Structure formats: structure tokens, C-alpha cells
Length: 165
Image (cartoon, rainbow, N blue to C red; front, side, top):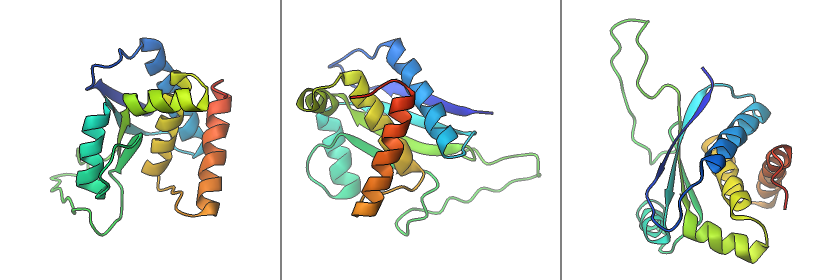
């Protein structure tokens, strides 16, 4: 098995070119490789500001749109529900064994940010995807050391993929 990307486009502001999906698949492989991760599945959803605002409010109690949200399947937080599977034999695996989690990106917010930062929308979406992926793996940027570590990891992956600023 390898790292797999399953994606959907639930917004109508922008068509997502196949080249961007190929680039996101490349970023997933590069980021996984950098973290020593070779197997797993990530679900990516492209949405708009309205939908991500609702998710941000409902799941994070933050009442505004954001650029990217990550929902880790392997999160050990106390607020997560325990999922228990009954397995009849050792050969059967649980249905989420390879699922790393979900990343949701607001295409509207990404477009605004790409214009603010003066780089391409493709680069901004790539950045947000890698950022979300690192959150799925447990990285955080709540303090300066955590932010510095995430920034370095994100930039290394983006540089390797040719998505520099």
C-alpha cells in the first residue's frame, strides 16, 4: 500500500484542475516520506467560506471562516469518541485502519490569501494541504517552537515539489 488521496470538490467557485490533484498527490508522498510514513489515506474536501465557517463554528467553536481544517482519525484527544470494532479473525482489519483523517480547504480563503501573499493559488492550496497533513500527524503551532517546526517542514516539502514563493 502507499499514501492515497481521496478528494472531492464541494464548492462551485473554482474548478480544480487535474494538474493540481497530481501536485497534491506528489505533496502527500513527499510529506509522508519526510515523516517516515508510507501507508495511509487522506481525504481532502474543497469547500467555500460559508461551509468552512460552519465547520469551524461547529467543531472548534470559532465563529468565522478559516483556510484549512484537519480532522485526524488517530487523534487521542479526550473529546473524540472511541470506535470499537469486533473482528472475527486476525485476517480481518477494521475499516479505518489506514485512514489518517480529513482535510478541508476553503478555496475562497485560499484565493484571498494567495493574492495577499503574492503567490499562485496552486502554491497556496499546496501549502494548506501540507499544513493540514502535518496536523493529521499531530503537529501543532500553538507556540513558537511548534510553529517554527511546522513552518520548516512545510517549506521543505513545498521546495522539494517546486512550489516556492
